[in-house]
Image 1 (cartoon, helix red, strand yellow):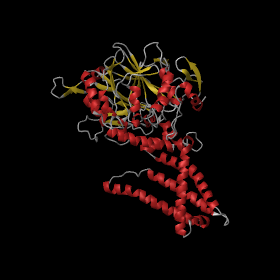
Image 2 (cartoon, one colour):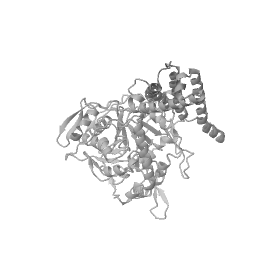
Image 3 (cartoon, one colour):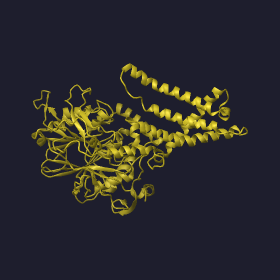
Image 4 (cartoon, helix red, strand yellow):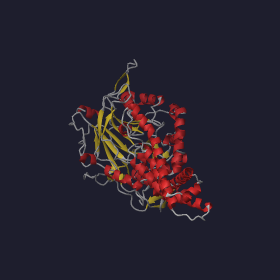
Length: 629
C-alpha cells in the first residue's frame, strides 16, 4: 500500500504517515513564509537559547576509551514518509553490507552506530509537536522499537532553521528531556552539546539559531565543558546547521563562515590561560571534520596541504568528477555536507570548485590566513545528473514537472492571468475608446499586439531602472535580477491570451454575460498551463539564490537518500562511509508488533545501500601534525 493508504491506519500505527512536502504549492509557500517571519521576530526578542542556561550542563561522553566506536550522521530527515522511513530502517539495521563504490572499492559490513547524530531540520515544513510526531518521531520509533535487550543507542540533535520555526519549543521538548524515540535514547540537555569520544576525539554540535551569532550562554557552556578540557593533539568533529563554508562562494557572502571560524579560533584552538590573567592560550586541538546538512545533497571539500602541487584550475575531467581533484591523504581536514535523510534532493552543479577559508574580504578583525579547500571528485547527485534533472521542472508531461508535483500552483497562475486579462482588456478599451467587452469583441490583433508590446516595454524599463541606477552609481557590472524575466515571461503569456481572444471571431449577437465568462475561462486554462510553464522556465534561468533552489525543491524528489556512517578506530583514525540508496521504498504493508501494536514494513526487501565513494580516512590531530600538515 502507498502512503495515502497507510494514513487510514493512523490509529493503529500511532502516527500519521505524511507524503512529501510540495514546496512550490502556494499554500505551503504561504505557511512557510509566515512561520519564517514569526520565528525571526521571536528569535530576535525571545531567544530560547538564553533561557537554556538554567538547564543542566553535565558533561556528555559516548564510548569506552581504547575501544572502537561507530557513529551515524543523518540530516534533513522529517519530510515524506517513504524517504524518511527508508533511511530510518537502514540506520536501525544491526548492520549494513553496502555495495561497492563506483571505483570498485568493496564495502565491508558496517555495524549500526552506537550514537546517531541528527544534523538539523528534523521536521518539515514547519516545527510543531504534531509534525514531529508524524514526520520524525513516529517513523524512527517504528524503525527501531524500544526493547530491553542490549545497550540502547544514543541520539543527539542539532536544530536547523525549520526546527526554529516555532521558536525551538517542540525541539527542546523532544530532544532535551532524555526521552526515548523507539530504542534511541536522547541524552542532551540543551540545543547544543560537547561530547567526549574515545581516543581523544570530541563531538561538538552548535546551535546558530536562524543564522545569527552564538549566544553568551552557549559560549560559556563550551568554554567550561570543551575549551578548558582540550589538550594538545585532541581532535574535534564539529556539527553545524548549514554549510556556511560553501555560502561564502555560492551566495557571495564573505561573512557567512565568520561564526564557525570565530568558534574554531576562540573555543577549539584556544582556551583561557590557567594562570587566570584573562589571556587565552593555544590548546593544540583542531577540527578535523566539519559536517552538516541543510543542503540536500552530498558534497565534500578537502583541505589543500602545503605539500600539494599547485593546481589553480581543474581539468574538464576533474570538473566532471571522473578524475580526483586531490589524492586521498589522511592529514587533510574535511568539510562534508550530507542532507540526504528524507527531504527533497538538492542540486550540485552550482557547487564551487574551491573554497578559500576564511575569505580575505570577510569583516572579521581577527582571522587566519585563508586555507584552500577543494571540492572532492564525488558528489551526489553528480553534477551532470544534477544539471539534467534540474531541467525536468519545465518538461511537460514529466512526473517531476512543476504542475505535476504542485498542482495548486496552476490555480494561482490561472488567477494571475485572469487578472492580467482584465487589466489588459481595460487598457485596450481606453486605447480604442470602447468599454472592455466591446474592445475585446471588435478590436483587431494589430491593436492588441501594439498595446501588449507597449505595456511590456514600459514594464521592462521600470524593472531595469534600479539595475541601471546601481550600475551607474557603483560603476560595477552585475547582471539584472532574474525576477525581471519572471515578470516579462508572464506578460508575454498574458499578451498571447489577449491577442488570441481578440482574434477569434465573435458573433455580434453573443451577449456579454456569455462572452465575459468564456474569456475568463480561456485565460484561466491557458494561463494556468502556459503561465506555470513560463514560471518553470524562469526558475531554470536562475543561477543562484532562492529561485535556483526551486529547480529541485519544486520537484520534491523522494528517491536518492542516504547518510554517513563513521568509524572511530582504536588508533584514533576516523573513517567516513557515505552510504546512499538510489531508490527508496514506496510500497508498504502493516504487520502486528508486540510493542507498537502495528508496524509498517516494506513489501519488497529493504534496498541495499552503496558506498558513494571510497571510505574517507581522517587522521587524528596528533598524527596529522606530526607528519607535517
